[in-house]
Length: 255
Image (cartoon, rainbow, N blue to C red):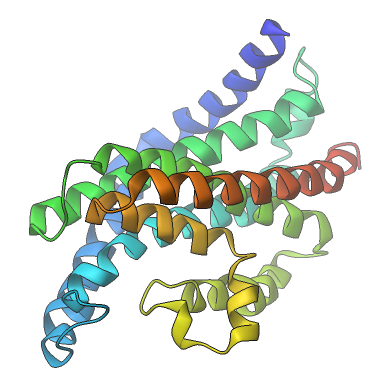
């Protein structure tokens, strides 16, 4: 068992070795995009919105930026990124000539998207802190939230990879699932303003629970309660998605 995790870790570190070659270029969007969101939707649009749920609009929106960054980071890494490694670069065929097998490859992918989600969410927290719009007592929880959201949304990307027949079909997944998830998961407004049926759909969104975790941490309110409720919900959703992803990707590694 220890060897299994060691080999899985090496798969994740292989991805890190490639990623850090252009580290600044890779993290630049993570730093610039939140700053643009803060300025455009917070200061400029927010100037026309007095308050939302008793908070300045910028304060309300900021936690959702951190959670949604983990969403996009993990999804694109495990959909387009994994597909390229699998189909075009044949990385995994080469890896499987070593003691590393399909179990270690899939586990390594999960480790990588969790680490990447945690790092990106933490960097967004730094940007938000620089603007002085969040409370910092529980900012250390952001990487944990990012890791959980990264695992769940990374699993969605792997599930998509298990079904698509070519790279262009990822656009369908993005248009029908990822983009709606971003807009209806409470990033920009409370979900209780939506129809009841749509609220129930939101409860099945990993991003919604990530947003609630991020809000409680960055607002420093109801942290224990929200992390118990939404943390448990996110973990349960993540487990289901990871199992589904595992079953779809395992045969692909031998095809």
